[in-house]
Image 1 (tube, rainbow, N blue to C red):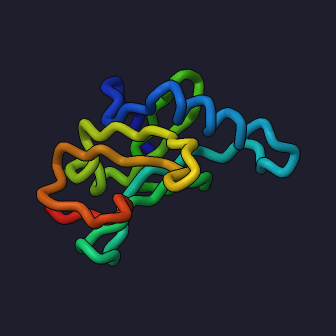
Image 2: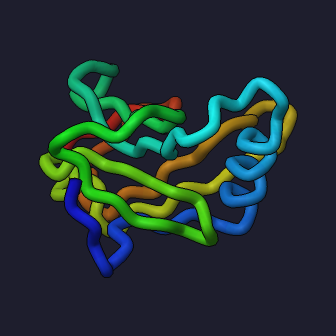
Length: 114
């Protein structure tokens, strides 16, 4: 696992607060990392991944406000510069992705194309 000095993505204050809330829950599995990545699929071609996971061999490691994060090294080119926010509205609750690398996004905001 490669440790990088430059943080490839940003979490807003709201996203940091939500991730730390999830990590503080009684059922949180200790020693897991916040995984940020992409996978094929979705209405625009690629879908964002965010969740807790173990580290893998091809991961890069970074920390944001003491949150241990991992990302597959191959995903960095799709996600570098992305900002993740947390929305707490009635119609829009969840993580919100603002990706400068996306050429188009779907209406739900969870998939994109490059």
